[in-house]
Amino acid sequence: MKFNIVKIIKNMIESQSKPNLAFSMIKFSTYCKLHGNTEIKKSYIQSLKILANHVHEHTNICNTFIGALEQANEDILSENDFNEIINIIKQRLDRFYYRQMPDGSTIWTTVWRLQKPIFFQFQCSSERFTEKILSMVMTLAILANDELILKTINELSDIKEDSITFWVFKQNEFEEKIMKLPEDSMTQETPVEFFGSTESFADEQPEIGIIIHNSYDIYSDWSIYPENKAIIWLLMRVFSLSVMNLTHMNTDAMLARKSREFCETIFGDTIENEMETQNNMSSFKIDIQLLMKNANDINSKV
Image (cartoon, rainbow, N blue to C red; front, top):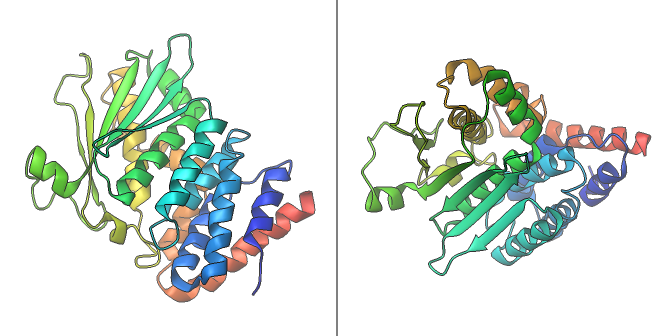
């Protein structure tokens, strides 16, 4: 089956409805890793750059970009292309900030411009591609979906902090510099650990550590484990911890549904159903058909 992913993305951007194609792009990036020739991989990179140039126009465009980027690795995205995409987004999104430090670490920041601005910062100490991509994904998820997070906060309490800082570590770097983790602290299903606050939620909250499993890039790879929910687990925890830290309320249990809604907003409400039923690689034919169906729906509305 032949299709033009670049045309699909362009049509989505130009359409009035601007449907969320994040999950379809997760599948397409996975398809590129499994079956992609040079031409298909070029179309993937071109699609990323087109989306990056329009992330400021609509939440669904930014979320589609998140879906497209989340499965990227060095096999389908070079460091030069990644840096070019970062620079494009810096120019397009006025609430997205990025700095690379002399020691190789990176700082990713976004701000909610409320009456009292709220800053979110992800300080990535790792030079590995995986942690950099995740830092960008988390920053954009908070930036693009701020209304949903704010709605949840307003239902609970007033905002009591003006900033949150997350430190993003690769597991072995965290264990070398800070402390050894218990062997059962991370699993293949949940390859992320959060080193959270020990302070009372009545007090000012300190920084939060996010430790990424040494094998996260494998466990989260849909071309290897197509049923994995690594990114869902990560973003649900970032959502919950952000809300709790900003409100000083320990409401983790009641935020389970809200954090799921947050992920469904980013990736589309089909992602959980698809991940529950996808058990073998033959389903990628169905995935591409789904991508084409999305394309036909878009074309009919343009």
